[in-house]
Image (cartoon, rainbow, N blue to C red):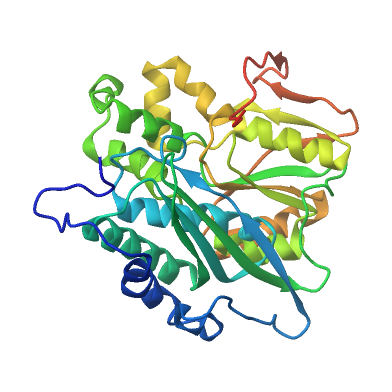
Length: 341
């Protein structure tokens, strides 16, 4: 099947790499002078005075990060958003991005136009422009690999490995929604069984299709966080990564985990859904370690930026990562989180 096959929707295949670049991608680079209109082999840029660049690349592939029938505009949005999420966790401001596209077959005009539209919407929302990249054709599923560039004041990037015993564990937004959204994409009939109306089901699907990077947290993270990373492979897995990098342990209070109204409704009728808030990927929330004396300022800064942040536990000197129930007893962990291997 050709990428973008759709009746009466510009199903003609694009016949050249040049057509893909100049017709659909070059307009996305118009706001970045160093991209040179995508007419050269390289782009150029310099950080603002007193700043340094931060780099991140995170590929998304068909069948792993998005479904074959996901709208191409949403695929474009997601490709950029999941990368910018990491910049937000570092306290960085997005500057631009490069992108490699690997197609198993030539895309149709409709697919490419919609994909570029989604990228353009993400660019406008995230304050970023295309700088350059590459397109090719190779066997295998469609793969999209952006590399985003951000900048932070020199020496100030917030790392994952600087949490200390006694720091407070905070997380933005709500957890587990994208995993439930993916299940609804795969089995739409679940909405009725879960007792969800169209609005709540749509909100869960939207969290899967169009993750929202918490860019508003960049400044509070930079000002107050001891350590920070985005949650993409599940809360407990990513928290474990932060603990190992920092040489600390952690206690998470299950009762404090932030969940949406839709998630809470599903949890009432499907106990298995509870695990999604702990172990499922695709949340793209921000996990932080904040010293107790800075928590109030961090929460206030997040609130002023329009982002909800919740305290969910604390870091410990013991290297274990444990989960407590409402009685303070250790809950067994039956999973860890998403792993590509």
